[in-house]
Length: 241
Image 1 (spheres, rainbow, N blue to C red):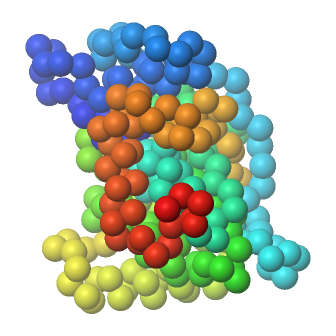
Image 2 (image 1 turned 90 degrees about the horizontal axis):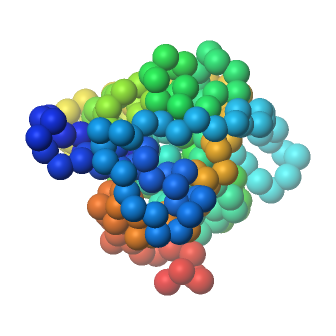
């Protein structure tokens, strides 16, 4: 997923991309297994994920839902799991045409899905705009289908809005960022209407928490978490400070 540092020559050391794809299921099955090389790394086939609807109906409870795609979902999940007011974060796939996609299918770049996280939060504690602030600070919104060395439509920067209010908030926030001059290039983050969200395979869930020493986590995810801690120290959950 994110920053799977792809080698440009077959003589180079295995890329983080290959490492991530090869170790993900291995970490969920055997502890301490040796990382396989990028030459043999492929997306691991898995059983189709269970379909869920990501529609959040306002007013029915104190919970609200935000769905965001900003590269590798291991990274995005790890960041939001630390944020005060966030009740649950699920890694999954959204925005594609194939029902019940597997990780292998999404990696093929043919299904149209993005790796994303579905965030359940308490709007009395954290606002949608605050969630977007963290989103833009912890990934590069000026590269559409790439985050670091992770390239492809599944890594696109996209906000999947659940209602018109979320869409308007996102539009205004992007406009504000473009006018601020904070970025040297224009924001290319997409605004897509939320469709069916498919939770990813079990081994993807809470990946950083369960596998902090995995290669991709040490070299990529950890940097995202550190940036969140540095930029949003006041928003870290109390039990994680």
